[in-house]
Amino acid sequence: MDYTLREICTITGGTLVGDGSTRITGVASLEGARPGDITFVKGEEFVEKALKTRASALVVHREIKEFKGPQIVVKDPFLAFVKILEVFSQEKTKRPRGIHPTALVAKTATIGREVSIGAYSVIEGGAVIGDRATLYPMVYIGHNTKIGEDTLIYPRVSIREEVSIGKRAIIHSGTTIGGDGFGYLQVEGRHVKIPQVGTIEIGDDVEIGCNVTIARATLDKTVIARGVKIDNHSHVAHNVMIGEDTMLIAYAKIAGGAVIGKNVMIAEDVGITDHATIGDGCVIGGGSNVYKSLPPGSVVWGSPAKPIMEEKRLQVLFRKLPNMWEALKRFGNLPKQKAE
Image 1: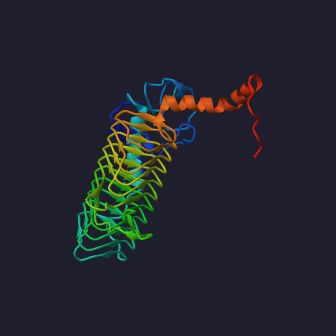
Image 2: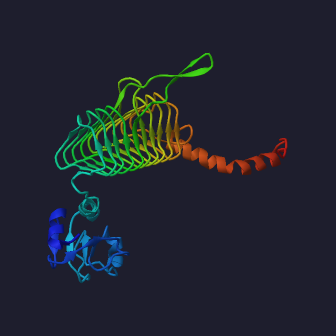
Image 3: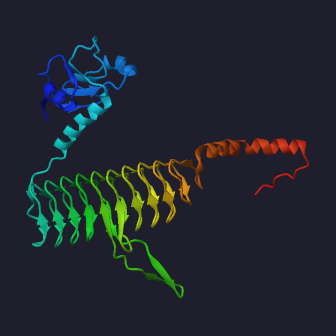
């Protein structure tokens, strides 16, 4: 990877200060940068550290006159640097176009233009792979499943039959999409499987982390709307509906039939009970268990989840309980605690 600083400035839309012909071959942090790298200064508090960096160029919020090298001045250095990272990332993940000789592609599958299908991948009959989609080695695409344009699927992803994936999705290794929902009927003490004949619809610009499981609907469809981001090891059960731009952080667990609104933030290791409705804009703190529906804009934490300030007050009281108990024993005729 080799760009001139002038080319990078065009990517950011910033103002170039200094030598635009400077060659940039990498991206790095202020501390880890070496000659040839570009880095960024997030704000005024990082200026002193920037003066010690070995980077060849900076992305900055204002010109730093004490810095000897060239700079790109932008309103938001972090956002500008993200744009630069996107370019370098695309270069790193770039795959050869075409179908690897060991891949098995059904004759009835439809393969778009400029696709990349890696070694030992399997594309079943009726599947549609959109233009410029990239499938790494050992990816499975089931019957009649549709993969949108410019979607990127990493190794060992399994997407079963009749699933729809939108454009520009990113699906990381080990994820399975379209496994059966967990549905059983108890008959005379035995668990009788309920066939799961629905499907899954995933929108554009969705990113799904490693080892995520998304179950198909019993009937109808499980829906992951546009722009949703799902972190590693999360589980989305059958018939769940997740609204646009919602984020699930690691180990989130959404039970069957739950409806999650738009722009919801679900922190790590959260559990949401079946058929709960979470309104738009809610924030659910880490480790919470949500056992009932939440109105839009709720900020909750705890198990069971409750308004965050209420939970914080309870946490403070819990820590004080041993001292409170000792004080009560001194001033009252209270029984002593027995050792277990």
